[in-house]
Image (tube, rainbow, N blue to C red; front, top):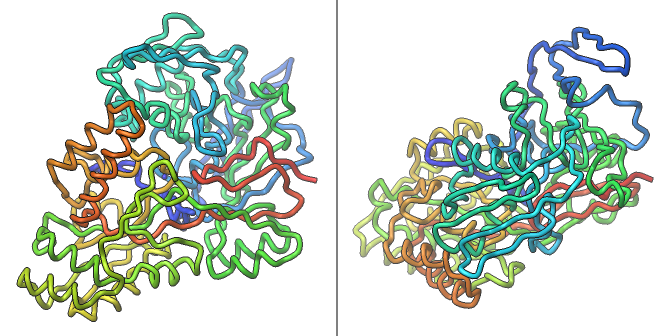
Length: 543
């Protein structure tokens, strides 16, 4: 999971914490109100009242499912806020939607871009025209054939209304010269275009009719391996196998269905896995990784992630507008202690954003000390600052933020800085962040692949997520230049320069890169924890 200056997608995904791996926000099941359930047979259409709090897919979307034999029960730590891929900012929603929708291309296991709905693409010699050829025979879950106009509609909706319109900054026009071809013309070269339009399911291809009838947020219809059946407080979200999936010839998906259940309490969720009540859980409490890894019947999947945890000081408020104060705080904290307290060793301290596992773009740069109170005090004295109090905004929906703030509070006390922790629910957190009601805020970014994902929206003067108020014309020029540089070595050099300035200016004070961790019962096969935090069950099976 990211959010614009009002309330764009944050992540979660931290999209985040998941992000990152992303820990998901806590939440209770949502009663979505009384709906109508429609069951269709070859001869008749019968309508009956559904139980209160249940949302059923409309008849044209899916018929009532036959009893499934191999249904994987997946436990999430939080409730999806909605199921519109273009409008949600919740990692819990994307855990579900990853299995319902497709994008034009998609990240492979190594995070390179591979064909999905587009089987191939060509780039003009001037890098300004991209032509995508759609795979034939793809059907939406309502039975309608996918055509190129669906891609045009989806992208135009994201640009006009969605949370990720900024990803199309270099796009001039999107057209469908025929049902199998999508053409995108650019105003400037965009070497990261594929990641921008396909890095996560927020860029999903949807049918216009589910927007027109208003069902997209509660009854999603995609082209993915599983189709939506229902959502209710007692059953969670139920998906069934899509028999018309475009990889059906490969025998995929292998599962008959998935049931996503919401278990906010981490201990309860872990117990449910151990007892076999659920087959899979989205996160493992860091303190339980070692013990769980040694248990019979359970597999722990752990990979270095592309997420990063950080905090940012409000540069619109004195004295945080003084770079010396921000640098003092960056010197005074001990990232190793913070990572250990929050992640129990399942993370790597880092003073920049990009983790070492992302070898193509990693920068080994660490100008700050580790708990260096002497240097920090010297900078504060130079800035004429003493008796400083920081209002630190966190959310217990992401417990790591609370733990990290507590450790930081103790560390900053050594240089006479008082931290007052403001712990609010995540919805309030988003509002306060967007309104600038903080001295510092802490969260994480998840699922990053390209360096543009790590830096532009957060640190460009015009970035949609630059809530800390950072502005450096040199950084803007470097980030703008890197966006159009097609030579990877030259592009890497530009991002390295930008990253050094961002770190030196303490626009964000980076803490660590967490591992991505899931766990599942040994009867689950074909599933793997991914570096981008995507939850894909297309190749999973039970047996």
